[in-house]
Image 1 (cartoon, rainbow, N blue to C red):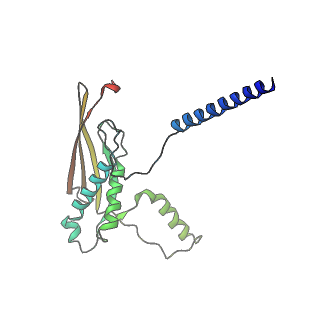
Image 2 (image 1 turned 90 degrees about the horizontal axis):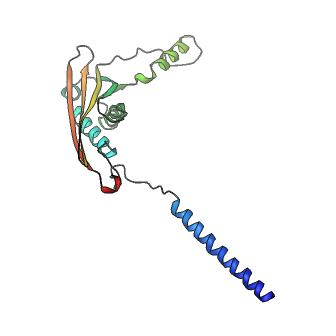
Image 3 (image 1 turned 180 degrees about the horizontal axis):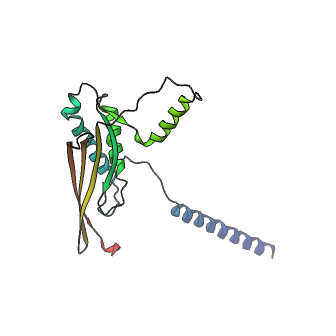
Length: 206
């Protein structure tokens, strides 16, 4: 009797171990995986025809190289002051369009060797309050300075044309950016970047 009970307990113990291993295996298989990839790499599982990180970087690098060659920048005796305005998104995608202009600004600040001065209009109210505090003598400073006015405004727009036929979708993007004279409203520079994407939906997604 004791031997039978012992065998039964051993069998139950073995089943418990097997069940535990199976549960742990299933749990490991259900756990998500995160890894770091190159920002220009494509996602093999990516569906659709939307803009991706590679498009974003290519557009901004192209615009920065084009803009810095402008004669009004290259031949200026003093660096022109540029303020960034919002970029209009007329496409059907949900895009933070202003990020394109901010990326162009970052590239130019890093690589244009001081040929352009960008104005940080996002902190205008903070600058005013800081100057008021200096005038009141509540904080120290090197003295009040006149704020720069913009010589040019950098802005742009994103547009798209979408078509769907059968199991495929096509999207054409046009991303254009321009530099406008703040005094005359004359466009001093404009360039564009065009992208066309085609996506086919497989049977598993139908």
